[in-house]
Every structure is written in structure tokens, then in C-alpha cells.
Image (cartoon, rainbow, N blue to C red; front, side, top):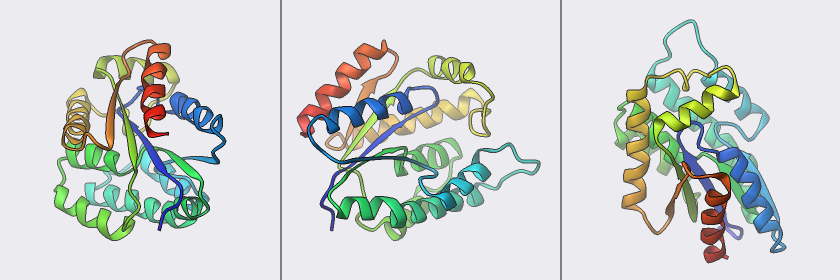
Amino acid sequence: MKKGKFITLEGGEGVGKSTNLSFIKQLLEEQGLTVITTREPGGTVFAENIRQLLLQNQQEVVSETTELLLMFAARAQHIEQVIKPALLQGSWVLCDRFTDSTFAYQGGGRGMDTRVIEWLEENVQADIKPELTLLLDAPIAIGMDRANKRGELDRFELEKNEFFEKVRATFLLRAANNPRVIKTINAAQTLDKVQAEIATVIKAVL
């Protein structure tokens, strides 16, 4: 089905996904490629509304199942409205977070049954999966220090360190189990060094 290529950026809080998304877009555009940048949860007006629900601090406890289903509801809309049409037109799609984040945050952090996530992945996404995932990895203390400097923390960023350690461990396990697609980048380095590593990976793909 796909003509373009689908690349995702993953990682915990404060690892520099947004900054490096712009860098990768520039690298690809320099090769004459048409590039769409987007994010999850979000990417469409409707999905961005779901994002607000997910990230805002709520007065009631949000059930883990509700959180998971909202993630995939936003993803379904995002795939149909943005990702699939762009790939069919031959564009390259760069996405800040995708299903690896769901496995890491809801599966690892929340401890949800990964079989449920796998079922949703299969039924919501079909063959929409990234050809390349760049996992920006840094120790939790470094990432959270950066996140705190950005301003008010969202509902996920307010979680305890134990939650983020589980998230990080899940990301790294997924990378170890799928080294062909998921490339781990040391995001604790200076931005120049991080981007040099990213450029090497992208050039290999090109």
C-alpha cells in the first residue's frame, strides 16, 4: 500500500524529540523529498482534542483502559486523515511518537496487558508501521530536568520516577528485540553529537 516512508521518533520526557524532528525534516528535504511532520497523540483537529483530554490534569482518576482507548482513537483518526494519505502520495512521514510509546507508557509504565495493545495495534493500524524508529534515550534524571525547564508539567510528566524507569526499560527492550527498525540514539550527549548520530542513521536509510 505504502509509497512513501514512515519514520517515528520515540523516547521519554525531555529527550529532544521535537528539536530533532525538525533536524530530520531538513535532512530529508535536502534530498528533494516531500516530508510531512506530525505527532501523537494528535495530528488532526479531532485527534488534538483527544490529546488535550489525555494530557490535562483531570479532577477524576483516568482509568488505564480509558487512556489506552483514547490513544488508539486518536491514532485511528491520525492514520486515516494524515499518515495513510501522505504515504500514498509518496511523502515521507515523520511522527513524534507512535505505537512504541503506547507499549512503553501504557504497557510498561501502567503495567497493562501487552496482548490488548497488540490486538489494538493490529486492528487499528493494519500495515501502517514505521520503517525506521529513532529511540532517543537518556537517563530519567536528565530528561526530567529538561522537561521541568520547559514549564508546567502535563498529566504524564507528573508521574513518579518509578513510572518513567519502567517506560525507559520498555523502550530499550523493544529496541533490543527489533534492532532492524529501532535505532537507539544517546540523547544525553550534546545536541551536536545527537544530531551527528541521527544523520548517520538517516543517511544509511537514504
